[in-house]
Length: 314
Image 1 (cartoon, helix red, strand yellow):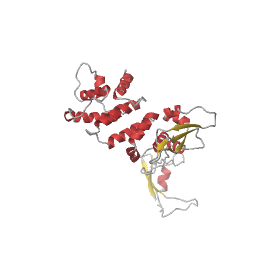
Image 2: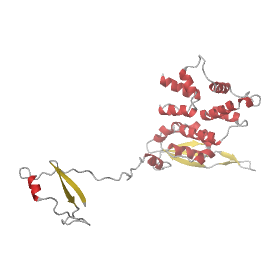
Image 3: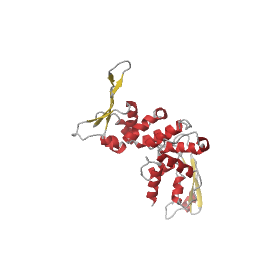
Image 4: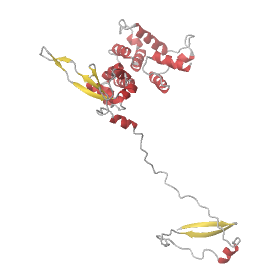
């Protein structure tokens, strides 16, 4: 039972409230307070024969710790359900095939192919190079594309990612270079960058692999890997001199090395403006983040990324 106070013209009257059910009976262990106040007191409080009562109420406290279930946007789930969907597909990629020399035999064995069903409208946005390979056919027909330079399991990773799938860390680590090569050729940019980050994280740069990694980074436009090699060169420049040959390195890479050395020193010369110094001090990850936020191309060399950002700021 709840005890309450009623105020009228400065006078306070106490009364008791209890729960009453549909039959008019008090529920549970309700108690009654009799002789709440005298009749004469109430008569004196009448206004034109009516008893006016002012009641002050406040809401019952709610449990703020209670959580409410709100379903997430099902778009990603719906997209993944289209992965390898044969009914709605309008293009088939035949991956693999070709011929392989069998051991001890003169004839080459023909390799089997794996079919991947896909949809042009999704490829157009997420894998434009693959989309451009899809020819025009009549409505309702399916176009077939042959892919012989990518292993089926790697192609599956690429298409799965295109439909919104997330590759495991183990898959990225195990197949990083194969994924990079496939995505670089077929324009799946963001998976390429994810595989690059995994490769940099799981492979330590050394004197023995430094040049191979530098050349590979240059051939596939891998700015993050190139940055990792440059960091190694800067940290070990005195040990590298006279031990590592740069004779077979393209001239552009020599410029990159010199630029990295200059970047490691304080730039105060007249040739470097404040904007250039600011961007030159940024890591590749930061440059890519800024470009992505502005909707600009993130798959470029360090110099190309800086040029894009400076052009946007101009």
